[in-house]
Length: 157
Image (cartoon, rainbow, N blue to C red):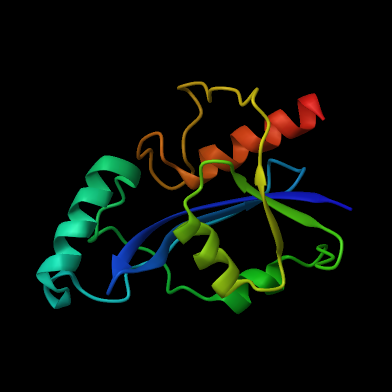
């Protein structure tokens, strides 16, 4: 059984959380799957409700702006890159404070993953010199959150 760490940041379209940033990290912390995805709609095509929700979410959480570039989201592409994963035995950990909406979104796109909350209480603070590989965009970074869980797991298991 292997452990993997998964975190995401997202945005809202019609009250549905869509993945904007995704990181999946195994015990080899030097080769995570880390992607930033472009929004499915342009800002001008969003309802006023969605614009308000995404404006607040962006500035108060992940700070990945709507116009920032990214890749089209492709769940199958991610699954194909997880060549060493045994979905019957391996466990994917999400932060203990991950929202139920984040958990639901991951399960929607990756139903075969065995996902559970990571409950260690010794999570280290990521030093300020550790930067996101995409763009340094604040404390709510999927890469930094996965790195934090992986370090804790590898050092204190």
